[in-house]
Length: 311
Image (cartoon, one colour):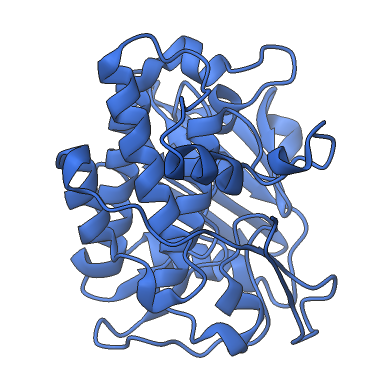
């Protein structure tokens, strides 16, 4: 199937995404699944979850192929690709801040929050995405963000506050502590809030949250480094902050991200509260407790975990 597409847009864990064109000339993104787990659970998950959605900040599924061993999903084409390349690019440091600017980053973070709030409360069933990260946020020609890749999504009754789940799912660095160890609580919509907070932190810093090659140990875990500067009322030390408006936007995004990555799910805001915080004044926001670095075990099957406070 992939041989019929010339332009490859990206590569994921289950297959590749190609640029295609429908008979009417409409450009589309075709996700061809080649590495199916079990009986194609991720494919069925994605179709089941996204077919229930209709929102300006959730990517639109136009069709799918389920024939023999062939599995493909046809999505609207997002010309600017993933948010990831605008946050951190080794060849052009801080490209996200320089190219998008803090006003755009602020708007994008708010739009993503609106999309997640819709998945959690706006559908007739609650959808937990469980893999929110920069790579899964796509940008159209106007840099409007849309949530994509529902392969790990969990559909549940809108009344359910906690969901049952076999094994951990998600991407290391964005997984909420309770997803890989129930000792931290049950998996819920607050697990997506944690992932959103980790992603927001990377949007702020223009770097991965965990950098083992950092010269100073205090800079290894970005949320902890930025928290210290916030707590001591120091200059934020972020590149591309050009004026007071940028500083206010950055400070607001930092505080929101730190609330979202609280270890205890009950201490995290719901996405509706996140939206309210991002739309409100930074002066009305309280600084949350110090964040901790939660590391998933090497084996998802292992229920043990390590919680590290970096001093």
